[in-house]
Amino acid sequence: MLTLEGGVVVTSLDPPRVRRGNVSVDDGRIVEVSDRPAPEGALVVDCSGCVVIPGNVCAHHHLYSALARGMPYDLAPPENFVQILQRVWWRLDRALDEPSNRASALAGGADALLAGTTTIVDHHASPGAIDGQLEVIGTTLSELGARAVLCYEVTDRDGAERAAAGIAENRRHLQRGVGGLVRGMVGAHASFTLWDATLDACAGLAKESGVGIHIHVAEDAADEADARKRFGEPVLQRLADAGALDARALLAHCVHVDGSEVELIGASGATVVHNARSNMNNRVGHAPVGSFPRLALGTDGIDGDMFAESRAALWRAREADPAVGPGWLLAAVAGSARFAGACFDEPLLGRIEAGAPADLVVLDYDPPTPLRSDNLGAHWAYGFSSRLVRDVVVAGETVVRDRMLVRADAHEIRRLAREQAARLWERIERTPVHVFGPAGDA
Ligand SMILES: [Zn+2]
Image 1 (cartoon, rainbow, N blue to C red):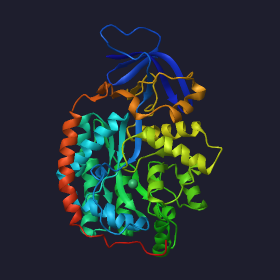
Image 2 (cartoon, helix red, strand yellow; image 1 turned 45 degrees about the horizontal axis):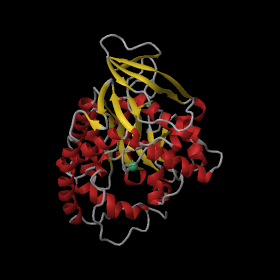
Image 3 (cartoon, rainbow, N blue to C red; image 1 turned 60 degrees about the vertical axis):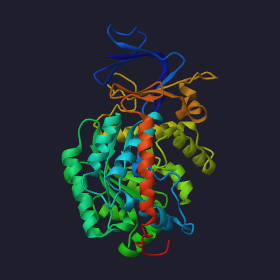
Image 4 (cartoon, rainbow, N blue to C red; image 1 turned 30 degrees about the horizontal axis):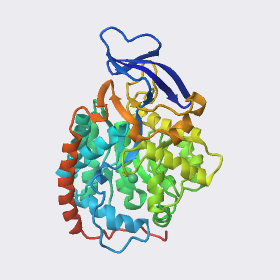
């Protein structure tokens, strides 16, 4: 039993609700938020002067990019999104092996937990080492104490054998890797790197496993141009025809969708993950975020910091539409938790109320202005940040205490990561530019 005592508690983000109280936790769940003193025998954590919020969810991550920070690049600068993939990410992913996958999951998982992100929805690719890698990542994240929804990113860009291995890896994970804090989806890269038979196989596996497909959609105009040229229809229609578009689906980006596709997404119940910083960094355009009834936020591998991500998303959305305000940000953060909650069959994930899973973050935030339900969004946007994260609880267990990982040594993780990064970077330099590209004019 654990009681977080005396803090200001954000019991819900959508609608925003803030109260003062003690959060009691038992057996991985919240028992109550009340004014009552801690029950006898409970471990009491003083949260006075702090704000207690639900754990953040990163709804689209690529932990495999954790060792990419600062890697050398001596080719001509990429001029468009496809060249970014061919020259950067599709060289990195082919150079990954099991030790670097594990180091990436350790470094990225630690980074996320220390930033107050309790659930990572990951999209993994390592074409040179596919078999068993989701187990490596799942085990690593469980050791740290993070919640995870994992999948392997199936693609035809590296040939039929690796496409089949990707599907088999998703199947293996869904049959044997889920349980505890780990769940699964079926990963697929993007329409423009998938032949029909491969997409059909992904959709079939998702259906038979009772999970959704996690796929990049219309991140760049090239994906839409390819679908129209090769299949005579927009990306979303192609996914719908394959049976891949349903309420469990997770669609990353959706920057270049047209009106018919927005309607398809709305009718399907699928969740769109917006990755504002990545979209700006790759110069792919701004997604029509106001058009999607179920919106979540992801970092697309930049880091595990949902405070930074949500803040950037708000500012970019406001730049496009002055009607967007901090309430939009809170709803999007809550949307990420709603999606993760569906994966775990935990509809209360992302709330602090009786019966909800105890995924909690204590922020060392003593607000310089009154903090209330009606201005929580503004405090989130202009005051909250990952540097305030003091304690993190996942499923009732404290995994970050006083800014330190409880189950692992962050310095040792980073030492190992630097060692693996040096090896990985050498392999990347020997890996040629990928020749695969989409059909059609972007
Ligand atoms: Zn992505």
